[in-house]
Length: 210
Ligand code: AR6
Image (cartoon, rainbow, N blue to C red):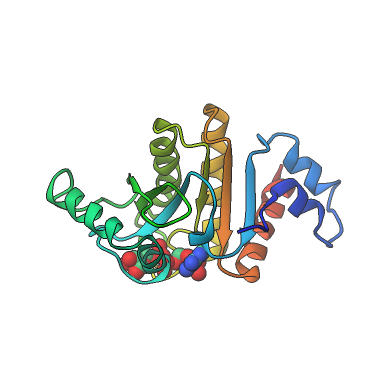
C-alpha cells in the first residue's frame, strides 16, 4: 500500500466547501497526527503489523481473514492452531486481541481481533467494536510495534453499518494514541474508495459537532 495519506491531507484534499470554518484544520488541531488512511489490500502493508478481522475460532475464514491467511502461508494457521490448543481453547472472545507472527506477509506481525456481529445495535456492538481497536493497539504497543494497519473491522461478513463503524474506529484509535507514544503510525486500510469516503464523511460530522 503506497497510497497512504495522513488524515490532514485527505481532509484538506476534499472538494466539499468547509462548513463553519476549515474542517481539515479543526480536525487536525487536536489530533496526534499519526493517523493515516488509504485504499488497498491490507496484506500489502509494509509495516510492523496488520490487524486481522478474525472469528473466535482463529483458524481462518473469508474476507480479509482469508486474504491474510493466504498471503501469510501455512505458518500462520499453524501458530493459530497452537494458540487454540494452549492459551485459548475456547477461542478469542469478541473485542479481544492476540498477536502472531506474520509468516510470508510483508508485515512482521498479525494482530487478530474478533469484531461484533451486528444484531441491530442494542447488543453492545459499539462497545465491542471500540474494544477491538483499543485492545489491538494495546497488544501492539506492548510489543513495541511502531506501525500498524487496520481493516474496517466487522463491516463485511459481520454486517456492522460502515457509517456507524467509522467514527467508533476513529474515536478509539485517537483516544488510544493520546495515551501512548506507540504505535507511531496507524493506518486505516479500506478495500475500495467508497469505503474510504464513508470514513472521511464521518470525520466531517465529528468535526462539525465540535
Ligand atoms: N484488504 C483490506 N480490506 C479488506 C480486504 C483486504 N484484502 N478484504 C476485505 N476487506 P470482513 P468482518 C474489507 O468480512 O465483517 C471472515 O470470514 C471488507 O471490504 O473481512 O469483521 C472472518 O473469518 C470489509 O470492509 O470481516 C469472520 O468469520 C472489511 O474488510 C468474519 O469474516 C471487513 O470485512 C469477520 O467479518
